[in-house]
Image (cartoon, rainbow, N blue to C red; front, top):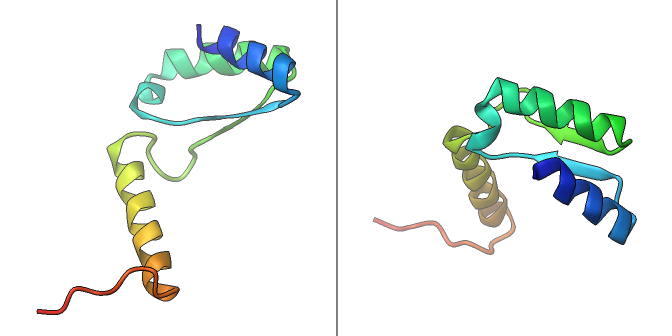
Length: 80
């Protein structure tokens, strides 16, 4: 189902890249199958290499967004 949806969107929208993320992609068998099928359909696949695809990666992303907001004054630091 994952590869079918990605391939359909690729055809309909002219997008030839996909990013795989989320805890489901901690499953090595699922990742291997999806990668093989998408690469054979000439869809470029991006995925996690240095950060886990599960909640740890999500937490890191949230921290990065918060840090960027602090640096641009979008977010005000909490004052004790």
